Length: 177
Image 1: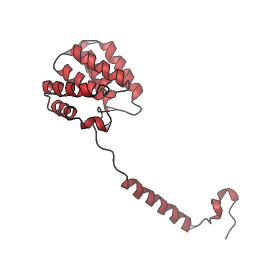
Image 2: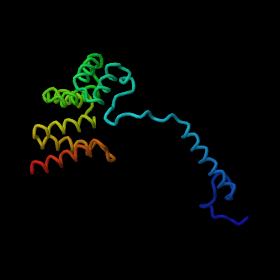
Image 3: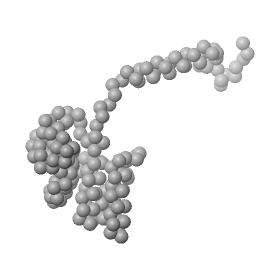
Image 4: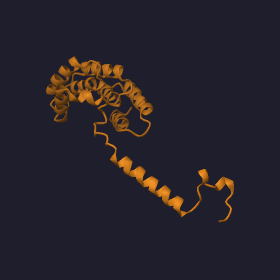
């Protein structure tokens, strides 16, 4: 066997050969199989940032289902009930703000968005939705504050940032501001 410089020699006295390459390939294959056997993360709404336990509340689930079909009053009833039991859930507060905003009750919407952001200052959905609510009352500066917050929070492109960015652009185009 030819002498291999010490800096190029495999450690632990292994010989550099095709057997070493096969061993590495086998190790990589086993690692891939091991990763494939790990449980996959459950699919979740990107705006739903609550721990899995919060999703077990039947009123929370009913409120989200009502939002999905745009039944705002039912969503408000169910989520308000869930909020009484889970006072520290930013998602419930965010969804309440979202439902109130869609009924035109912006004061209540802002109240719940503020609470969601008190509980979780990095809640992407709350930043997006409160930014959209500020556009509804023509407060572009406040909407842009939440857009800037999303830009800081989203280390990679995120849907909430893109949605609010598009809403701000549409607002600017519509109003000429």
